[in-house]
Figure 1: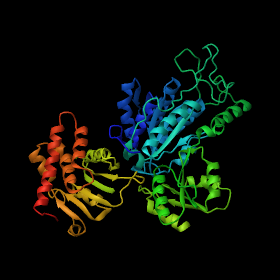
Figure 2: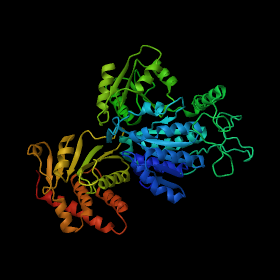
Figure 3: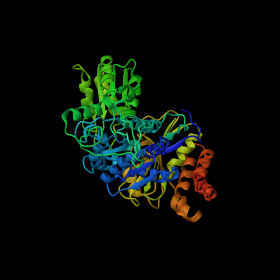
Figure 4: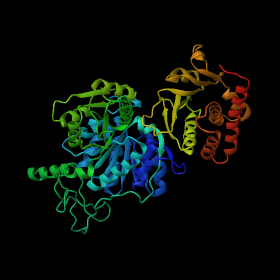
Length: 380
Length: 186
């Protein structure tokens, strides 16, 4: 990508998220600022009033997540951004978002440590929390872009998936990406797809909020437009009212999962780097994938055939793609900024006793290419 | 071409913007650039830095490893961030604000430029510190041309301050050129 300065924006990753969100049609942000995600909120506060949208800073993260779901049910495309401690607080309402089927995007710019940890330093230790943090069976879509141009496009994709499947979508960044500035060329409006939730064609009198006769994603009617709604976190039937009928609950919970499991071809996204003839495989995501790309180049310069697989959709986990990759390589190395999380998914995707090597780092310093290169050389 | 620069100071001195201007200048020349600031918990007064990488190829790993140019405007930021410098790196310090270990003068090419004093005497307003600092870097390295830095700074400068920023840049450039003409190094 050779650049013409007039088109290039030198933006931190967090600002890329905000710009892309608005480009995707986002018109509501409810949040509570937290490092290293605060620039998303600050920039949304700047952008939204100019496009007729609304920004609200709430008293805490739980309330912020509540506004995001409320705005969504009123028809808005809504966004919030946070980091680990705030994400923990949003989880209960995130589950509410899944069960009431409120499309929205939740950004987690991951920082170090449990609890308040390392506010200004990176980690990738919320990746399992993104999948399993909120209680109960629920589907999850989480995206892990690694470059700013990709952050722009994946933010748009996050909104599209949220709208298409009527569910919260998580965008996982880390502090390296959130605060890193690099060149981005925002695509021209109209040059990318924007998906909006399917609206009901029923009249207000005939509207059934969770009518799935046409498919697993119920057509939507916004609040305040004359349609009757009952919104509850309790298991509910097609009318939205609570039920404990085992068959109804079973059907509905399976339907929620099926929105994701039944649409993998629309959701999965994996990128490869010099993987065609690779013998030593690396599986990495987010900023760690960038260090891995350098390590792959360095290894190849030394005659070692290394190659990288990196998920842009990390949840649902690309089990089949990892299995295929494992049949091609001798071993897989999994570097991640945590003490070992996504490696478990890689291990259970590989149906053999293939050695899986871990490279883990906590402490707020990113994994650098030389650490991964050392791992490649050891495994070669 | 691969060039790494680190500007360090205390929060509030405006050095993070200096990094953005170098990146803009790099884009003008068809190069790639990446910048990573480091924050501390303090809004002002804490040690801060911005790392800038300029490369003729796409930048994959965006963190610095071997720094070519290091500018420091505070002793505590020098101590905290004076790491990962390449042997023979250009180190620029303001002698009124920064004291460094003697052995560093052997390891690096150390230049002393009274950036704060220059800004205060010749510009009268400290907001131009980063423009003066940029001028010193341009005069000491060839990572981007003076013309590109001028164009980038002009674009980024708040309306009405363009000519002052141009002047501040020249002050930095001229001081270093004179210093080099006199044969002053470490």
